[in-house]
Length: 342
Image (spheres, helix red, strand yellow):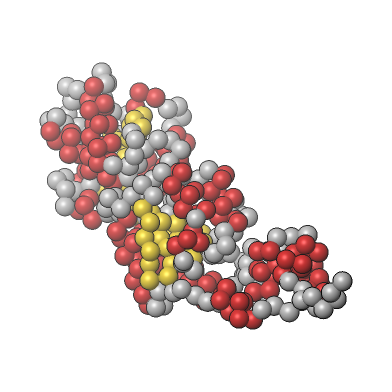
């Protein structure tokens, strides 16, 4: 028996009853490992006389000075604001940004996190649309730090990522405003219910009972979903007097199609969206919207990620919230309405 055989990281992992990656995290003082597990590994290292390969270790911690940004749909006018803010913040720290467009597809989001190592990036900023349990499991097991821009769901405290979100559900601001201006038959137009589900839940929670005939779910948060929703609402025997749109692109589609159909906004029907993207200020009429602080949220999410990367930090994960703001424009001003023939 060769008693002089060099102890390897595989030997340490086997003795400690953990994976090689976990031993590596303990050696490099990375996150994603409990204090108890780390203590056990360090004890095994001392007992076995294991000496880490310092050159290999330095390769493992060497930074690429690149981070990834995963967004749902670059065609949404809100996303460039987020992407610009992430890029500018990263540039200030001498980092580049690799942008990934998941097309709002849950499977694409999951595959992207699974394969994140192939991108050779030091961290990830992600704006998910859906939040299946699998997504959070992958985040918790990720080999690189992750920062989440969260507009979709209240996340559990044990998610191993820095999270920037809103302090108040933005949809509640929409519903409160529409009620305040006297609208009583309020409809909802959005993407499928499980995509940014909190926006629909805000509608649901704001009403004593939901009239399902006033709910339209399209395929996505696009201009065309808004146009199709307008056609649907106009086909009803008793039209709504207001529409809460799941985002601004849907709101723009609604207003565009209502005008073509001779429905007056806001006299016959009020429309309010969410995102406060630039296009809402150049439509006719200008569209009311809730600002979800895209530039500020994206900047902070990026700063938190870069701090964790640069400090190789295993500090507690941050939870930061911003307050959304309702911007009232022409599409939902209070008006004296005549009886509509629709």
